[in-house]
Length: 322
Ligand code: F6P
Image (cartoon, rainbow, N blue to C red; front, side, top):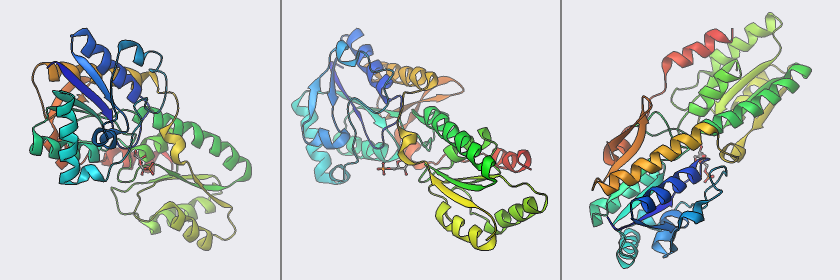
């Protein structure tokens, strides 16, 4: 392994910069040249590739976003796009690739390997935490902390007005941000995409709380919930016209901001181990964290499975909010 490249792909996540920094500095330490690829697979296809030095990653560990920029590339989803990508890697004599991204990015990586045998190590980077083979994904911790801070503030105003708030948090296919921010803020109810929403149950709970004069409610709804925060707001307002109900969407603020200490440390560990794996001739693996140890799992298995959501935690929300 003489020369490797690193890219960030899909939605950005706080901590990606720490991982890029670790990849660059570990590679240089081991006398491996390292190239950065801007805008993920899009930049790879378009030859937006540049050599990186140690000082290029100075002063970035504390920054949100990704210094390499990111994109979701439609072209890379095609056989022709991947052939172009492989050609660029060959042109620059790049022997291995570190891909920091989510499930979609890893699916693309598997195809690149199958068609062009490019050695690849993946690092899970997504605020949604919806990747199997790891207990941790870069950005999740920071995103949940951001959601918690915002929901705490909303609870202040909800309490002042005796209002019910329906708060939508990110998570297109996964409810981890909703579940964890909901538990941490004492939400009365949490709705996630992994479970079919029982609206009747929510209505009954609010009815019961109204009768016992519990006036403040926080319902945290993941973006990908089958019923959805907006529809729920309408249903509740119709059913309880006397209640003051507000709908708040936290949105992309959850993707930004300075990464937490935890995201910086774990992302650094994953970047470091990804380079060591490539150096040892390993490929087609994802560096994840299981029981606080870095573990390598086959990329094609990781993309086949889905993280399951913890029933116990969902049950706990019901009990602790009663
Ligand atoms: O990165 C994951 C995620 O934040 C999802 O939770 C969300 O649905 C999606 O990205 C939003 O993507 P975009 O920024 O491209 O609209």
